[in-house]
Length: 131
Image 1 (spheres, rainbow, N blue to C red):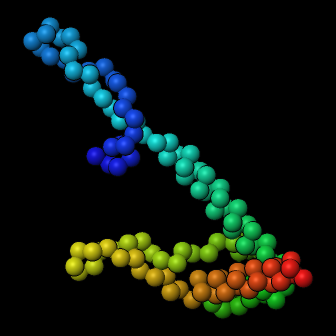
Image 2 (cartoon, one colour; image 1 turned 30 degrees about the horizontal axis):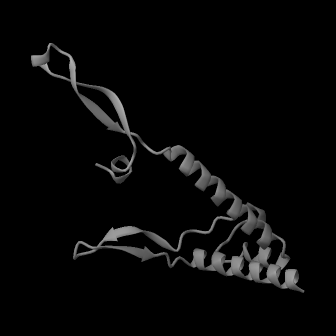
Image 3 (cartoon, rainbow, N blue to C red; image 1 turned 180 degrees about the horizontal axis):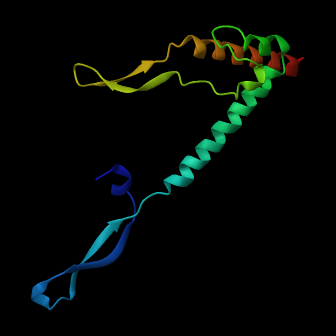
């Protein structure tokens, strides 16, 4: 049984019928409720979208940083095409030869360039905010 079902509150849903008792419900069946995963994913999606929009605004606020979006390795045709998404630092867990799971680092040059751009934009924003 999955962990979210193990810890969920029990919900009575009728019961098992026993032929010896004339078909009456003898033992109530308990079904485990599920967490509302749709709401969980929706809130995570909204938060990720807000963070991406914030990163995009920061980078596009500086012309030199925006221009770097059109240079290799990013190569956007126009800086406005970037939606603020930065790929994750690791890829999903993979099983290695000894049956243990480990995450693979995302060493993509595009990710490295985006991280550098976003860090520089944040640094500049903090400098102007503190000055």
